[in-house]
Image (cartoon, rainbow, N blue to C red; front, side, top):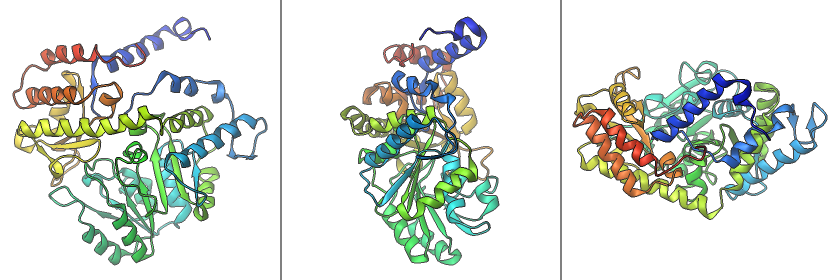
Length: 411
């Protein structure tokens, strides 16, 4: 197919090319981002975007869905295969992103005003886990648990809070927690108080599929995930639920929250889930863990304080209070050096608007082919920027040179 964008809209084309070059010349340390393949982009940019497919497979509100039905069925089948699930689990791949996926679970299983319990945003939870500014915290009564000053979950305190408030859903899984999650303990707590256990594994889905993190499925009623992040797919989501719960969740997706699914996105999700059990994918997930640990160890050696003492997954939280620099200042300096990491709260921060930390992760560097040697080099650059206060523009020259040896797929 002949490329037409440059010919028809040169301004937009040029902006996209600049973004591709920015991705090439920087090291993306944001743990929620990914680096998809050109094969995936073929699915995502396909004419499937033309088709409306409101409803479920075999029960559409529009004709002409023979092949969209087959694609969605393939995606659902591969979602279950990716995590070794049997007939007692079902999949929904229509949620447009992780936030509506979580909301669909709440609207499917809760009544308005009933109680849900999730980790506070300031401790590493997600907006959709009951934060007061989000629909999850406005429509439902929200109880929030927190990590201790050591950055770790105190499971007994979670249990005490659950016994006190009797939530109907308890959420495990986070957006900024560097340790492994004890899904078994969450399952026990939920069972004790008669709650559903929702495991949101958006960040760690790739690690879970590769057995680099404990599985939630034996202990959860519902599991949600985004398909980007460690899965390295398109922006989208998958909901996996016990069979007896899925009808309610399906109805919450459509007609409750959405109209037609994005069929091109569904195809890209199917492609992503088809790669999960390949040897290349499994090895990459193991390397993500090694790279994160190497980066964490490098920073600890340089005198940085890491929340929870390090990392057991793909991300780390750096507490910058001992460095006399704010999270925002550090984020901006690192970006000038070509190192893209985001400011983040750390335990004890009085306000999320002026956080004292920076969140970093290893997925994208690993997807580019970088290994422990490069991770250690990145740690040295971070120290030179933040501790030694070297000129970040000078360090960026070194970053660009390293990046030239690890091409993104689109240059």
